[in-house]
Length: 225
Image (cartoon, rainbow, N blue to C red; front, side):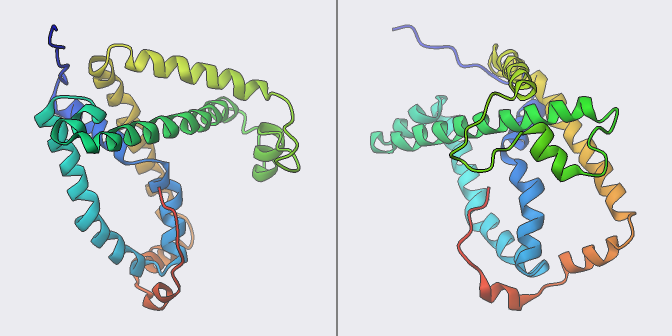
């Protein structure tokens, strides 16, 4: 059997950007501030950092080591060292696929909002515009409703973009990440600068970095991603 040629990244920077793009998701942007606010501000950051150092980073290093030494995809990489662990790789693939499926929908929303932003179509009723004008949200899950065509066409455009982003493997992904990772970080930096200049910003920063250990006593089981 002819040995399959292993694809390589064009540069170390492309790999780093791709790793950042896969590790930093929407949960870090829109869910982390809410969870930190709910559970004690600075006090929440302490167990978060402990979990990051004792679980997050070691597992990340393990995954990198498995991939580097086996030179195989996730299922084969875990199976390379022990066939009993091959299912872990398939589980990682399934999770990645699930994330892509619902992120694509959110990207479709964002694409629509990009067009609407030139006229600020949502006006002052931002919530109403999102749920009624964009999503056409039904009253209950039992009411499926019809196809929302702007979202449908936006979703088609997103999947076409995804297809051409990965069509050549790491060669095409290595070029795309320079836009899809660097550009959002620039936008995020602009939003941070704008946010800290708004009235009351210092109160928010004070709450975020001032530990409230009492709030940690009332932690409930949470799913964070």
